[in-house]
Length: 288
Image (cartoon, helix red, strand yellow):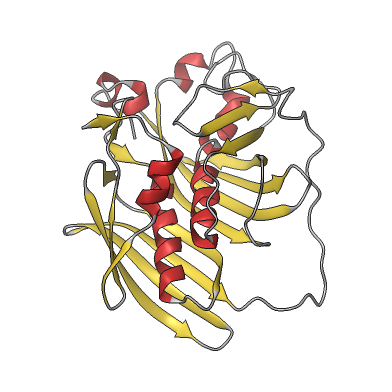
């Protein structure tokens, strides 16, 4: 069933339910109005973050590394199985497998710890870019989600030539009070613009056709949380593609608050392949 996606609905998807010792179940959400039949890989990442947070309720999620092996079908359910690698007084680590039936779709390694007092403290400064008021509004992806692009009007346009970097302001409603859901939401949107960042230098005359005849997919992502994930208003997602070649891309990024606090750092590997003839018959928004 098709339905308008929303941030509130996404938070319900993240909030997986315990079904047994180290076992959780989750939904994948309804089919979106854009015709896409598979979930974004970062959805499984968010669900794994919440599952591990529920497994270690006395600790806070510090980092997560996910590898996406198969697409997750929309309008369905997933099963999450946790294998606890280590559980100590200060640190804990678990590997989460996300499956649909017999299909293993993702594995996520999550580390949690007990927050401690600062011994040393520093962080990267927020990039000096346009404010949200000066940035360009992007089409709405879901209700409660507002995205504004810095120095770019349309990330998919072959005319948007520039260095392999993108800066985007994001505002969500609602902003969850729970730390695990806030981290899941922040992590989910790290997967939104990575491939677009990689493709930006390859736009322009002579490459527009190549840009529309490649197939891309997010294959892995890692995220580290540096501060309690609390914010009010806009977040700045900064992306830089440092390498692309041999059918793969690499993007690194950071998430800052408007006030300049660094909440998280992330990195992604993307798959870039020539599009098969059968793929070109699928509407662009619905392609994996």
